[in-house]
Every structure is written in structure tokens, then in C-alpha cells.
Length: 130
Image 1 (cartoon, helix red, strand yellow):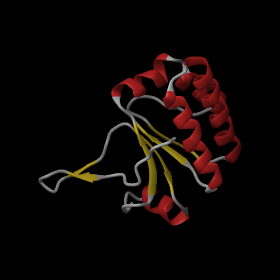
Image 2 (cartoon, rainbow, N blue to C red; image 1 turned 90 degrees about the vertical axis):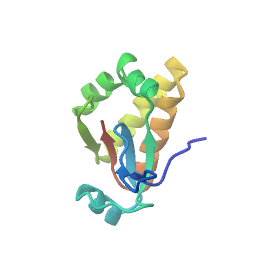
Image 3 (tube, helix red, strand yellow; image 1 turned 180 degrees about the horizontal axis):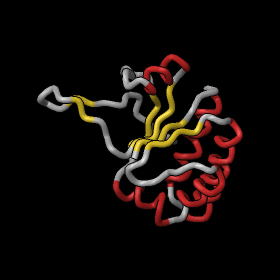
Image 4 (cartoon, helix red, strand yellow; image 1 turned 45 degrees about the horizontal axis):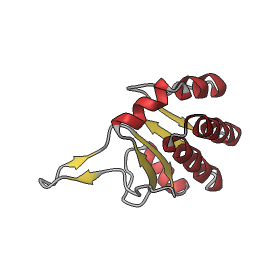
């Protein structure tokens, strides 16, 4: 089962907004995507996957990031932001992530495939904030 957060920013006890550094998200609809692109997203605008250090490292050590970058002609890398909007590229992302899930047994790749599937079903994009 895919457990995803639905808000991008969280408040600390001191009322300061904190945005996780390693985050993959899909806007819930076109207006939410527009708000995300302008930095004005609201609670509930996003379906998110916040990556812990281990899972983030697996994206690179497993070869997943390189395979995705090569296949889709994008740049997913540390300290880079990237988004995928094209339906065919999203479908390729699903396929590649499922292959890595099968080959490694790591749940993070299944979660990525599911999140990309959410983007396809919403006719929207997936965003990588690293």
C-alpha cells in the first residue's frame, strides 16, 4: 500500500515552515500544478513521497536515476529539481521503476511506480525536488 502525504510544507513548534529536501510529488489537479510552479501551493494540493536518506541513496546506488535519466532524457540528480509531464515518459518511468522493484525487492521503486501512475491518472506531472 502506498502511503503518501498530501501537503508539501510542515510547521515546526515555532510556526516556521519546513519543506523536506528530498521530495517527489504529484499535484492533485491543474490549478494545484500552477500553484506549485509559482511556489504558492496549499495544503492538500499535492500527493507526496518524502524520501529518507536510505531510499534517496538507493535511487542512485541501484542505477535507477541513471536509467531514468538516460531513457527519458532528463536530469534527476542531487541538488536538482526536475519534472516529467509527458504521458509517454511517465509510462516509461512506471515501467523502469517496476523493473527496479522486481530486481531489487526495494519498496521505494514500487512507490515511485505508483506515484507516476497517479500522475498519469490525473493527467498531470511528477516533480522531483532534490
